[in-house]
Amino acid sequence: MIDQTPPTAARRGPGRGLFIAVEGGDGAGKSTQARRLGDWLEGQGYAVLHTREPGGTELGRTLRELVLHGEDGSVSERAEALIFAADRAHHVATVVRPALERGEVVITDRYLDSSVAYQGAARALGHDEVRELSMWATERLVPDLTVLLDVSAQQGRVRRGQVHDRLEREADDFHDRVRQGFLDLAAREPERYLVLDGHGDADRLAEQVRERVSLLLGEAS
Image (cartoon, rainbow, N blue to C red; front, side):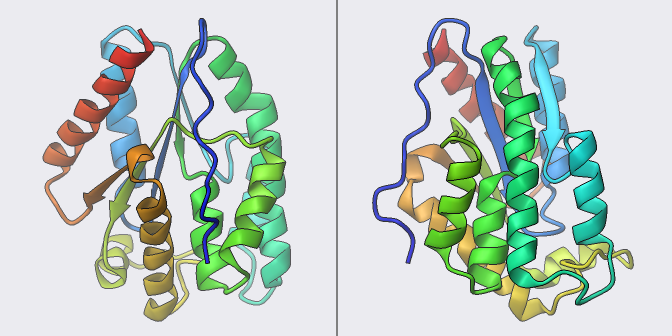
């Protein structure tokens, strides 16, 4: 079960930026929507940091190669969870927090919800255990907004085409558990999530994301 009392997003103060995570299963369109949101914000005059997990740092790129592009079975399930947490700890300490302290808008393609959904739910390592590992690694930094793009396992596979990493190669029932893991997280904190049907038109999805982010920016100002 997911913790019944999830932590709230860190309070914004003078000079604090905005932290946005874009989440969803493989093939959900996360990278596209993260890029479109960042381009729009930059057009509005905001300083934007685009990043991703794993791979948002030099260390992260090395870890990404190890955990996603090795042979099947080359990384044990618990090691996989720990590698992602290590990447996240370094990413937050060296990239995300400094940018937020500079007052920038940070948009990350994946964050701690991915670990809960993939390793906690789909790998059956436990929602609470995996989530708490990432909360410790990040010193409990939670996004101000998490955009969740929800797509079926079948649609995600179609969109990915013929190129698959270790996780993408998992069977559809694995990706079904990932999808449900994300939805369970969003159900616990609906005020901090924007859940969108990732099967929809990309332009309309981008518009909905902009509308929600505009509200947050209004609150911050």
